[in-house]
Image 1 (cartoon, rainbow, N blue to C red):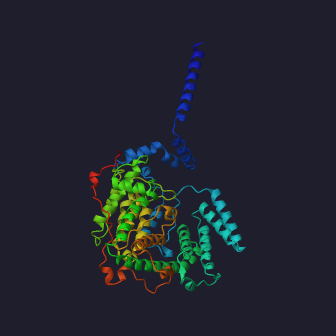
Image 2: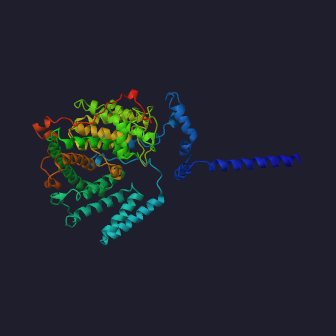
Image 3: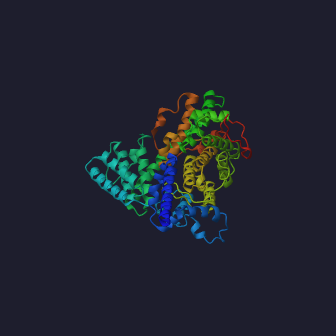
Length: 527
């Protein structure tokens, strides 16, 4: 009898635990289940014991709270604590090659390491089938259907060099057909196709060259992509030079506008608010432009909105003021590592003081991209700063330099948070030091911004900013003759336009409220 009573009590205990567990799980917030279901597929892909151990909570806790605070020489777990030590180092040799060169030479491409997510074989096969069907449609003259299939294949298998190369060829053919020329597979001479083309027509050839570049990054041995890029790169460089010339002339026209022009004053103030709004919105901030302006003007919280999002506005505002009042005042001084860290410190000064102005100390993962390990960041950042101040960088057009520096900083991903905002600040610092107005990357262009980060995109953003200022001052942005592409024999840039530009002051925002020192930063409060 005692034995049966014991079993009965034990059974009731288990049943009670079961019901308590059900009650606990039903009380969990809905966001918990959304997060669980989104993370479950990635957990199931952990197919080997090492990855499983490294993903465990115990491993992360030991690594974060014990090993990071211990001396590397004294730690017996040092080899296992470095998350990213299992990533092939030639991937980061590629980072160095990006820093030290523009990567225009075919020989400079280095194949990426397979450090991203585990590739799905079924997706790879589906991409191959889509590519084969696209080739058949292309041969039958159904160009539109072939392009859709190739885009679908590139989404399924974005590192397949054959797919990327074929997609580039499809865009290149669109560019040629738009001019009414047929393709001669033996000899392709584009010199006669470039002149008098509108800017929207050349976008296809720029996209094609970008896809050939991606194909070579993933497979440097792709001979067909090598030949395609060798043919299209000079064309894209000519187009870039023309675009730079057009922007240079507009900037000179912009500086002829007197500072007392009321339309220009108003446009500069509006652009300041738009800079902060769009730069935060790209990173997911949900504040509207009007709400962003209200936070900056009143320093009071807006009901129904996250305080962190509102403090992000104040942080970027502090960083912009530091850029205007400090970094631009010594435009002849080389940019240093401390300048970038100070910008980042202000970006996060109202959000996370423990990470503000510090390089990350752990490995992070950004989608398919695995940034360099934390131990490599000081060296890579110093190499980047040296490159920005080098003679090679000085020979580039300021827009090209700003675009490359921005892309390289995003690739290194040196901070735990605030990488995008800091990279755009550095980009605009380089533009403004050269006499250009700061470029606004708009929130609605986010997919283009994340997908390409091309020089042409920054050129468009810069030209759009100049056009806005000219429209505010004169009511028009540019003459009709500036809307056609005519390749110049020599590119006149701001530093080649003669004595007029020598006396152009560096552009500052006129709306410059008092900058509270970061050490006395006042977090936004509600009324």
